[in-house]
Image (tube, rainbow, N blue to C red; front, side, top):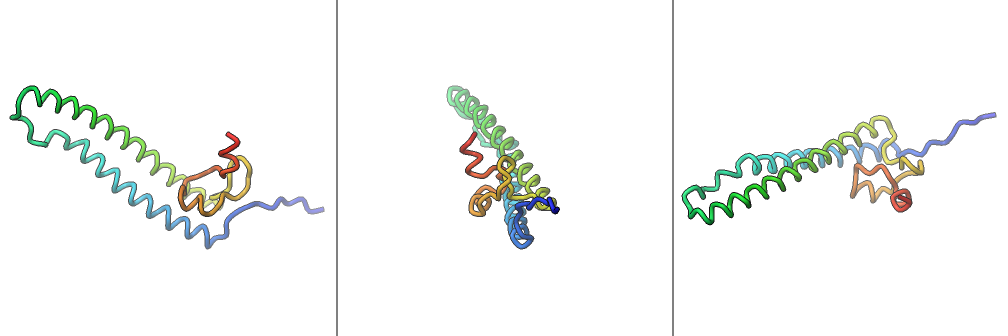
Length: 127
């Protein structure tokens, strides 16, 4: 009596396609992160040192706000990169695209839009 369970998984050709997509997204995300970090590091080189004191205090408040916003953006971008790298590991393990709740394959179109997804729409709606 054979009790082997059929495992849902994408064929290697699809996994290769997803891998290429994810690697491109990682490169773009790293580039975006570098821009965010450079904006964060160079926020004081805007040449307003000799402007009126009133304007300067508003400008400093604005700089703090944008520094915080850039910091939040950088944190989100780093998490996105980590999630994409984790997706690459799932591709190597051949578990990519399998919903961690239902065990069913996640729709290909969803994976193209959100390549680090680990839940199908069905499972997401159940949450």
